Image (cartoon, rainbow, N blue to C red; front, side, top):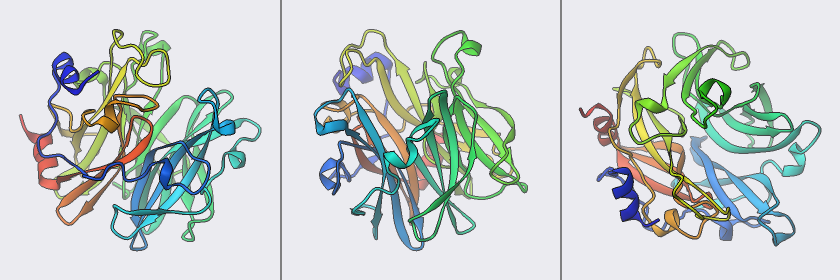
Length: 337
């Protein structure tokens, strides 16, 4: 589906203030020094004065089939947040995870809390998808898993600090039975004293609250603290049963866009404002065509560089890209009536 068709059919209007990096993608399979095919959904943060990226790498078994693939997590480092050098070996290999009940780890989200580096992730198991939190050692070579949810939960992101003495995370549980047997998933908020045990969970943002969503709605990037509130970029999915083949599958009937909301600094369960229109929608060739799944924008990392937000996002479930927007514009976008 062409960009103009997407805009017309779903009445979408992208932010005019968003700028895509002219040399997108910033990371793709050609940049990886080991077996790699799909390089996307990368967590990015600044740690020890360097930009750290941990990216998902889905690679085809025997290099010749898209019907079977494994997943590694790769590590890349940058001095400017744009040009990344990939380590020679994966940070976490498929074989490190594929043991017993566990199958694979993917979709990393990075955050620094009190000078410590944490990563939220999804974990496929033989009995469902679990969301997890790990602490990564300062050497960027080892890690310790702190917490794993029950199935089915994923898309977890941590706030960058404790709020009222509690750690806070956003997440997207995946209920079917309780949502009328439909693929309708919402954003929830949970609290913890120690990052291990989580509770006091409640609904934060439902699909019916966002006009450019009819399917899935969940956190994308970890919250970003500003004087006006926590900026949260979320993913929003439109399902269209008229769509046909849009990637490797016989049918791919979803369009992924992203929006932004602003949460209260003292009570992050309070939404101060939500963007009336998407922040980013599939528009460029690398977002619309020739991907593993087309029509996909999925942000996973956001950083402030002076007065500008760098937004790192997966495109077409194939590569990692970069967009930027002024911080004040993001806040304005949330509060505009």
